[in-house]
Length: 255
Image (cartoon, rainbow, N blue to C red; front, side, top):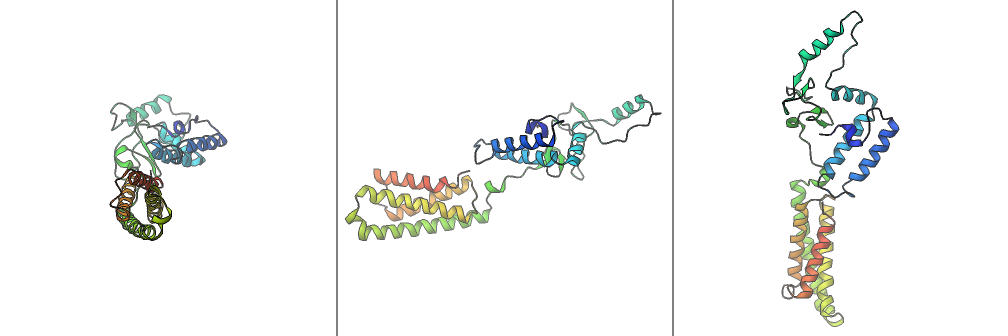
């Protein structure tokens, strides 16, 4: 587990201006809209947490104390032998509960947890340093639609796709066959069905993005496409139109 300083690529002695500049560079690099790696979301969350701590002088001071594995102590009096302080620190130090090899007196911040954690094993959370068992990092809500949103999106997607298929079928039957070639009759309506379905699911899911929503969009588009042209759907123009429609449906909600 990287420290806050390692996440931002700075030294503990960095100035507030350097901390902010490094944060902006890091968050820009890992932003999910620009970085498509599977770790981009978690890295963005960790970078935000790191900056939230390091930009505040008091939080930074407390974090530095935790990072060194020492609680804040008042300076020993001049009459107190140095050897006594060293001896006390040794007696209080514990072994990390996870790597079983690093000496530390940093304990998980969650109430009731008695695990000791070293700087390498600790997990930084908005409420302080915690052990891996208690960290429970939450998924970014943007990529985690609720069951209610999934059901509503599925209902709306199939409804819009079905209505689109019926409407396009009526339009083509009355006018399209006269003025449009067969390839266009299949390609454009199927693509439009997918596009309208994708926009609908994007809105009903509150602009969430996930694989589940993509599956819903693809199935909904297929339903509308079959209603529009169940006979010629599996011809070459029909397949091209279907693929284009599904692509347009899932493109807007891809994670």
